Length: 158
Image (cartoon, rainbow, N blue to C red; front, side, top):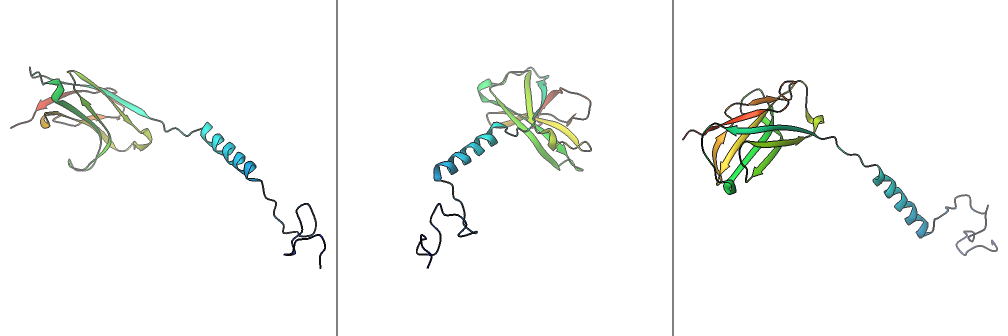
């Protein structure tokens, strides 16, 4: 029989050398403090994604004044595919209650841009929920050419 130990055979706290497999436990407060310090350290240096902006203007030639409270301009940055219908949306911005010429700033992740891919801006003007004007052709961007495209909208054929 071991004297000075617990009934289960483990030595009392403070006795050393009796059990080589004994684990040292931290008091709950020290454990919480260590976790808190670790979390604060992780928050001190956040990883922020790098963002880029594609700026441009949109206008149209027609002498029409659309009601500002009913207009919506949707601007999209597209990754063009092999066919005209195959395009992936990289970024999108919707502008309400606008006047023309309108300016846009599409926010996108530059890491999502592939140097071998073709990109274009597509713009659509909705009035009271109905598509009225659009960019009739894709406006190439991110190709080392035009930094801020000036896009001219055309009426939708009835």
